[in-house]
Image (cartoon, rainbow, N blue to C red; front, side, top):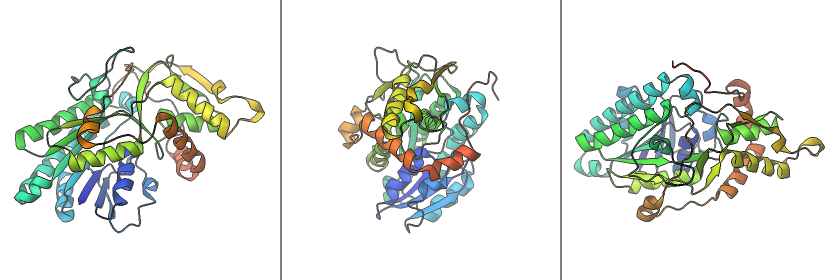
Length: 355
């Protein structure tokens, strides 16, 4: 099967590429613009495989995308390319609209043109898999509720609004033009190769540098955490076995407050890399002004993908977080250049005006 992955140099996209390329039955083509969070070092272990190819390109260039679809005879398009950090969307929403909305529109048009050129059998096999987030659903009360595939959309941030728009476009191209689209919405991912602006890698690396560990507000906001390799396996199932027109929620069944996540990381590091003088990493926790429009709680019901496609998570939050901390302790070659050259841990998302 020939699979095109957009955004394959990003966090989730690189996990998908690593998973798919290990199967010699797949040919994996990775299309990525290599913006700030794209990192080819995340693909080092598959870079020399004969069934893997990297192409630097922009999903907004629909002519180039169409040519790539034709040249590589793509069977499945997995669309992960996106601007993806809420705090960055607060500081500069324009890039999120351009990539997540306009880019998805152009990608859908290229895919539709390509799909219409295929034979009847190839049209039946083709899938456009649009990968999205649970943030499109808004937030939940602290004490009740869960996101299902039927939950109405209520995005709160420029990021989640841009992803909601792209979800609607993907569904519209299926309903209006018949393009065989499948969709998935996931909870918060974590794991190896995670760009260090996000909570878990930021806390790990700040702790190792003896820097403050920022916690928004009082740390009570709740997220459902999903190990990225479990997510990648789910995405392969949706892309290859999902029913066109259907949407699948993917979560880790691991709700934790932000404060408890930070404290758990501190406790793991206390055991694995103790601070000098017997101090605890928890002493570095610093409560900071909350993010504007910070959603209270996310929780995903994964029953549909578990029932219909047979997916199950393999990592609990405890085992996955321990693996993640170990990876960052053992792979400074990957994260040190990022901290030195691209993102050193500064606070994002405090701009009051949109740009």
